[in-house]
Amino acid sequence: MEKLLNNAFNGDPRSIGRLISLVEADSPSAKEIMKKVYPRTGKAMIIGITGSPGAGKSTFVDRLIEQFQAEGLRVGVIAIDPSSPFTGGAILGDRLRMQGHALNENVFIRSMGSRGHLGGVSRSTHEASLILDACGFDVVLIETVGVGQSEVDIIKIADTVVLVLVPGMGDDVQIMKAGIMEIADTFVVNKADREGADKVAADVQVMLKMLKERDWVPPVTLVSSQNNTGVDEVRKILHDHWNYLKTTDEGKRRRFLQLEMEVEAILRGEISALTEKVWKKRKDAGVLEDLAARKTDPYTLASEMISQIIK
Ligand SMILES: Nc1nc2c(ncn2[C@@H]2O[C@H](COP(=O)(O)OP(=O)(O)O)[C@@H](O)[C@H]2O)c(=O)[nH]1
Ligand SMILES: [Mg+2]
Image (cartoon, rainbow, N blue to C red; front, top):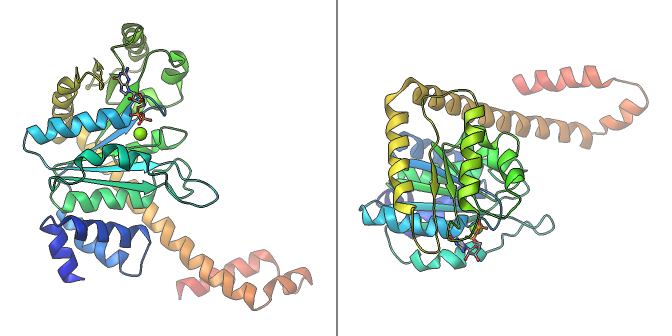
């Protein structure tokens, strides 16, 4: 384990992939791995890329990778793919599409299934981003599925949230989706090579004026990921936002909030695992029969199990 960790921390892609797999599978060593990983984290810019399916997130990420690389930065990418509720398997389209970068040792790309987690930003996504951070990637890009809760959940783990919008996709619906406007730190109006991009950008500006005033006013950038225009501007904005977070109270507040959510998520996970274990034992011992016969009641039973867990 020590050797695997050291190889990963030295940037060996296979070892990094192995670490992520162990943590994703929730193997017995996962907790030990994360304890070793955690002290090395907090250096990478964690950037969440969200927006409706088809908005061009993957294409945009591809361009961003090039931009950051040109700065000499190492880039890790986590693409959360929609997983089939029947098989739990990930659709590998994104990985294939981004494979152009897969052989470069300064770029690490990983597809992760959302594994039934509503929204797809699961604990293992977070853990994978921590691992990439610890392994010396300067930037970690997380592309979300772009539906449902994931778009909002990304705020729990990303330093900066990029919302990708496009013209001609029911603009009002995209923009109005509950909670998303509020969490975006910067807006990308992608496919600006198409008609209507200006209108989307103007609509976003209007919506932003309606939100309560903040120190950081989310910039809106017209981008064509296809023609590679506007991407460099976004790269600069991402650095600016990072500096903003590093130097302001708002940045500190956000980091504290994230840490709070992180501890709570781990705590809830551990408690529910413990609870399930004890509960299963009692069921196996026939406690449902006792309940049905009113030999005990659910309240007494719950108290008993809690005492047992505490001991
Ligand atoms: N015209 C145009 N098409 C784009 C642009 N960016 C992406 N696309 C196309 O939009 C489609 C969806 O892109 P993809 O990156 O897979 O979107 P995702 O589902 O958000 O990851 C693909 O066919 C892309 O080639 C752009 O800037 N302009
Ligand atoms: Mg994609």
